[in-house]
Length: 81
Image (cartoon, rainbow, N blue to C red):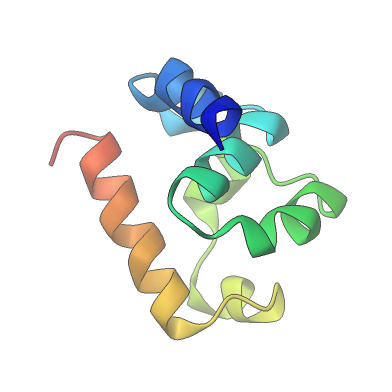
């Protein structure tokens, strides 16, 4: 848990679009959505792709509506909104 927190804090303030696949997975772990990390990794979802995913793409990846909402909140927080 501590490793994913440290990894998340390392990239938290950098633009999402610059995140690697590993950074995205650390981000998912840090917001308690680590159950999706394997799917994101196998689909090579980096920050640039993550920023472009819409609701239907998330659904196709198996991300529930509630988890999508958690991601949107975390995105806003990481962008300082």
